[in-house]
Length: 201
Image (cartoon, rainbow, N blue to C red; front, top):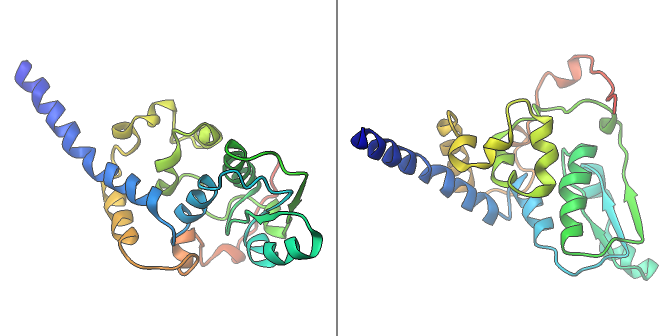
């Protein structure tokens, strides 16, 4: 019985090495979304912007925070995130920002047509897992039927996903730029050919 226990401990230890490597690479990533956007807002400390911009790619590419700062006299910061929904903008970008900064006086929320439709990609994705122990990601656990609070344990959250872990490690080892690959953002070729329900929330 003792030998079985030792064997299981060794297997679990070996199986947690790739997820650990993946999470470290994800948290250090600065050039591939979604990791780069999450890491960017996580590292914004004591900026205390007067005005922040939230939204998806329309917000990210449509507002020049430097120009707005020089014209308005307000400290402006763009926290737009390509492909993100209201849930992601609020919980991940805004709440993460508030952990290390004061509340802004003003917020611009860019509301494009996409904001009113269901997520264009499956909500559950391995790319969010490196961050789910953070309090602001509790909404994500509650939103995904595939997850529970037990997934805050490293071995549990990657159980059965080792192939995807290696795929993400390989992707993170390649030099890419943010938004350079639509597939990585979860886009589907047939998205515009099918009807989509409006969000109920």
